[in-house]
Length: 408
Image 1: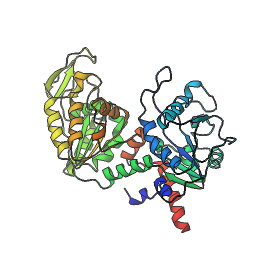
Image 2: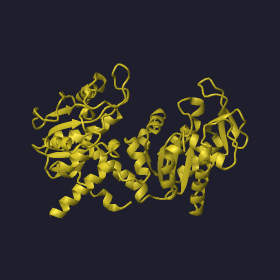
Image 3: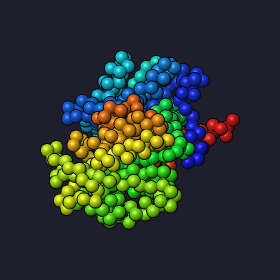
């Protein structure tokens, strides 16, 4: 990936140069956190990940406005469950300060003093947000002196608050979370320490086909898991019983393996697997050789021999990219493979980057958060970066940085 991708203006540089004091700063954060039926936040990683940018601006004496999307509201139709009120409350607790939540904020009419923080209600309630309305983007840009995109999780979307505002705000820059994500992805894929090992797992090859193809041209080992692995087992002529797979994509799997073998790289296949007759917490898990899967068996995890071999591979890796658990880890008897690989990643000297909702859940379950070099908060954006796609919200920051360099 070209080095120019990473030439963006950074919030940390503006703060170090004393350029935030007294300025109106608008931070587009990713505060799209899961909630239960009562509105209680059940997982707050994204809120905590957004704190450094907010704190940096407050400490620098800026008037700070933060907005984010939450869920999938219908534009222009407010419902209580779409409100950022629980998020505002949690930020207030974390920072031990008042955080006002402002509705109907697009046309201004509210005041924020230097050193103050306000949260602007769910930006996806604004008509024109998702279609990146230029009229809306210009109105929002007029509210600030400096626009900060710190929402890597939405970087693959060109919306008014992720793209349009960056075009029209006086200054547009990347927040610390956005910058850290891109630095980590660059380190993992643009100029990785070898061997580069990627773990790509999930239920369907079709949903990750472009990622598999993109990585197949870069990585030294491509570990596949879940339903994806079953399709690759089929491609190798191995029995998979009634396991989840996509027979129509067997040739695609063969092509990927052939592409890698041509480069001297490969897709390791498990020599043993864990099977059951049903997917249930009460199901009996049986370990069998990969070539002895019965007709009524479902493959729900890799076996201990396979996990041990992969663990050695990860111990010797230079860089590890992890997206997806290897089995149905939510049920303990089918989580052994994911647990062993998580431990191997945790103890490997390799630079490791992990992303995707199920991956984050596995990391949390096995308590290795502090031992993974970088955990990406961006699900879709992380996947699209792995696919080799240009992220619109990042591309616009690169363009704005070029403007600055041209003016000098």
